[in-house]
Length: 343
Image 1 (cartoon, one colour):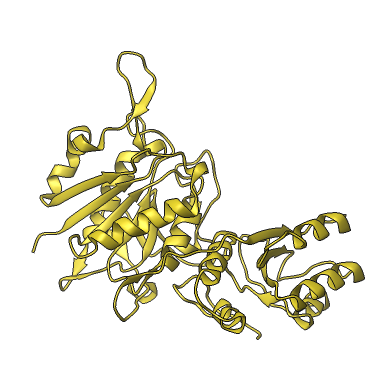
Image 2 (cartoon, one colour):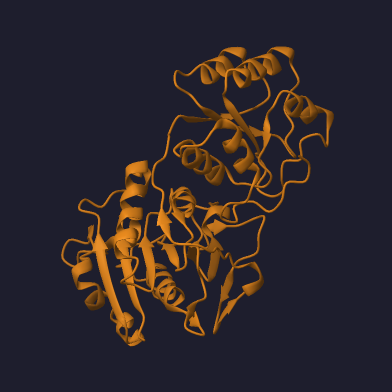
């Protein structure tokens, strides 16, 4: 059976071409995709494309955008062997994290990719990213998709989507996954790492409801009571991602702990993640994080900010009790965290 791949274009740099007359960048016509990227014909399988009615810059991505992508995949799930999502780089890690939670029991590849330079530029990275993403999305072993999760492919590396963040605005290798190896390295051959590929069982389904009553509280030296009070006091707020130092440490001012404790007693979820790119939160390792653990702050292990925010949005959008949400924050639902050292 030949593979068939669906490209979903949301917007972003990869979808721009240079007008040969004016030199200005204009939107890419995906109805004539293989005319513009003739290398795709060499795959000798069906490649279809669908575009957002109004492609958007990734800075304007919203929950509604994620729901639209999830809906397209849901409607087309039985008709295609894999999906490639062309997306702007700035919020790609957020979108790939969100989709990883929305798409439950995924048995096919969903590969995000994009580019730092428009696909119509001479030195573009877009063509290689697109061609290889399509190849990965179609790759099978014993007639089973090798990749069965949401990923980001960029500059010769395939990463788990919810473990990734953009670290460079300049380099072609714009993404990194500090706490996990790449799922595949691309050179002359594509070398997959089967021991770390994510697998799930059960019937595929889409859970697209999300709750955006989530805030980020990044601590810093000299932080004022007014700032903390303003964030914790937001009307309707249900959860806070607390970005702390090192392995989950924060200042121990009595006012700060009292504010957090009072908010937690009023059913606010507080999830502790580290500001560091590499490593994990281990509440209780140092005295400065023991206080957080005692008042009910939840340790976020080695989740990225993007994964922590979208996981909270996802869980709060489901019909779950607060105790169930807390329990699931400790669990790896889609491979988004490695381990939780101390519960």
